[in-house]
Amino acid sequence: MFFEPVETPYDVYWRLFGTDIRINPWFWLMSAAMGWSAMNEGFPFLLLWIACVLVSILVHEFGHVMVGRLFGTDGHIVLYSFGGLAVGSNQLDSWWQRILVSLAGPFAGFLLLGVILVGVRFMGDVQLNPYADAALYDLIWINFAWGLLNLLPIWPLDGGQVSHNLLTWINPYRGAYYAHGISFLLAALLAINALIAARGHAIVPFAPTGLYAMLLFGSLAMGSYSAMQQDNRPW
Picture 1 (spheres, rainbow, N blue to C red):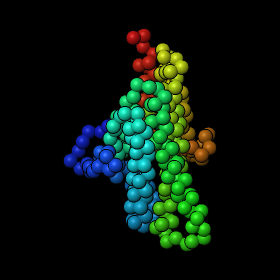
Picture 2 (picture 1 turned 120 degrees about the vertical axis):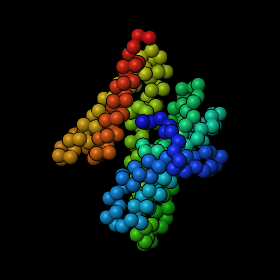
Picture 3 (picture 1 turned 120 degrees about the horizontal axis):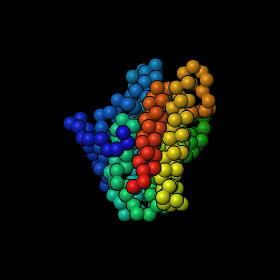
Picture 4 (picture 1 turned 180 degrees about the vertical axis):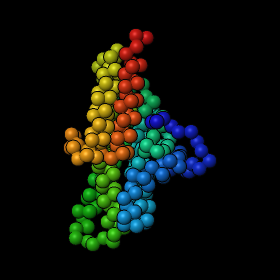
């Protein structure tokens, strides 16, 4: 599910900063589903949430693309149901370059977060209209929480790619198996936590909960387990 989706007649295309961008229609639907609670305030607030998701994920993916470009790759961006992909940016021979490209996405979001927080600090006690206030809240939440989530050592999130590259450098023969094992255990724990949190008995504080989190981490756990089986084969 974390591979580039096939093109559809409903995809949106454009080019920004020399980078091709494609938005799959599922991106809009999943963004709306994740922010559906904004409808309590009205439809414009849901549209505002989707716009903040769009901006935040583009900033994240451009982080990958720009750092990859420093090392000689030329990736393109695809936004789809599970977020975004910087396709081709990580196709590098050096393990440390691949790690830097992986880290560049979350840290681009943290940079945007820092700019927003500095701006809020300089605004002082200025009263914002409800739309501006909601946009600031959404941008702060997305770039902070999703950035931290992406740094978890779960494959193929950015943190999982970092751990995979690091462990395979340390141990070329078993590093991938260990990296996918860590990913499986953590993703399974978070999937179980999201499931039992519905009954008010979460075992991991501050971890994502709800149906989307359960499906996401469950899928990541299954993918990691499958990768472990492949890594453990003698050939």
